[in-house]
Structures are given as structure tokens and as C-alpha cells.
Amino acid sequence: DAGITQSPRHKVTETGTPVTLRCHQTENHRYMYWYRQDPGHGLRLIHYSYGVKDTDKGEVSDGYSVSRSKTEDFLLTLESATSSQTSVYFCAISEVDWTWTSGYGYTFGSGTRLTVV
Amino acid sequence: DQQVKQNSPSLSVQEGRISILNCDYTNSMFDYFLWYKKYPAEGPTFLISISSIKDKNEDGRFTVFLNKSAKHLSLHIVPSQPGDSAVYFCAVAAQGGSEKLVFGKGTKLTVNP
Image 1 (spheres, one colour):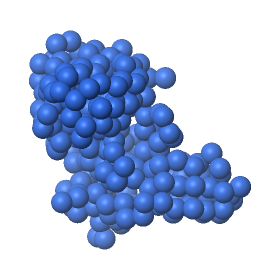
Image 2 (cartoon, one colour):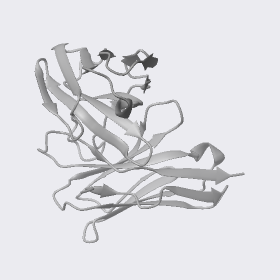
Image 3 (cartoon, one colour):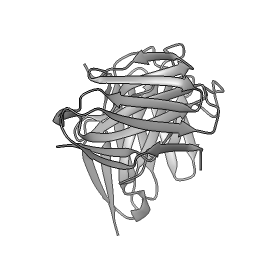
Image 4 (tube, one colour):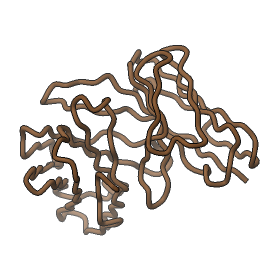
């Protein structure tokens, strides 16, 4: 399997507490992404990174921050968790491949199920 | 507004028959079109892709068709197997568009034995 791991796999936290999710890759890929998956919404991009210390917002970035101090690690922080942030969070990595035959795509981690009570 | 629409939340087919999953997109600038498959409690996995210079790409039982004029993408699975039961996400991207994939909401496929 591709070298991407997410931790923790499951977490329950209380409203108002800070939470940090970790994504670790061993592929040396340039791009890393955080998505959340919710019923009726599919996969929505929270933040992404195109290199060390280079990050940008996705479509649902409010209430989240990220950091990437090393190529292999991309951290997602919920500054003050709310019940609306209960979700499954997926990290993904990619090294863009522009060849026409192989296309291009992400490799996803196994996800973190976060419950905010 | 949604850039990628999968209008069927669910689809049920019999084993051995064809499964057809559909996806519509709004932006004609998209260059790459992909399908991902997701089992419960796992991350999505890449299934098949097609670039805008083609109208068909085949990989075993899976074929993706692209109709650029209609901005429509479809995934055909023939023959369908119970192990194909999963959620299928359509995703699109534009070259030079910061390399971000935009995903649809997904279609849950159930293949009945």
C-alpha cells in the first residue's frame, strides 16, 4: 500500500476543545490534502498543501487550520471543535502525473472518524 | 454551486448485469476525469480515469465514457459483481488548476447476488 497513514483512527472530543489530526506520508509527494466526508455532501476539500510551509484554503476551511513543517507531515487542527465538525476526515497525497495514459489521481489514507460531543 | 453532480445517490443491480453510474460537470475547462471507489471504513481508491482528449477508456470490467459536449461522464461496470458494492465518486480537475480534484457527492452501488 501507499505510504500514507492517518492518526488517530477514531477520536471523541468535547465541544470547545482543540483537536489535531495527523497525516504522515513516506512517498515524498509534493501535494497533500485534507478532505471531510459527510452524508449528502461527498468529499469536500478543507485545506491543501503544495509544499513545505505552503498551504491554501479549500471550500470548507472555516474553523480549521493546517501546518506542514516537513514534506512528510500535514497536520489539521480544529481550534475549538464544534458538533458540526463531526465527520470522517481523509488525508490524500499526490505527485501530479500529467501523462495522458495514466491520468492523475490522489492516494487517500484510511480516514479519521471524529465525533464532537 | 456544485461543479460536479452525481444525481443518483444510490443504484441497485443484479449480479452479472451492467452498472451505469453517471456524473455531470459544469466547467468545460476540466481536463481530467476520474472515478474513485470507496468501501466502508476505508479511504477512497482510484479506479479509472480519462483525459479530455479521449472519449473512452477501458480497464477490464470498467469503462469510462466522456461526452464533452454534454459535460457528462459515465462509468460502466460489466459484468457487475457483489464485490463492486461500494460508493463511487466522480472527480474532475483542470490542468493548471492548482492540482485540486473536485468530487461529486457519490453514488452507492449495491450489486445483489
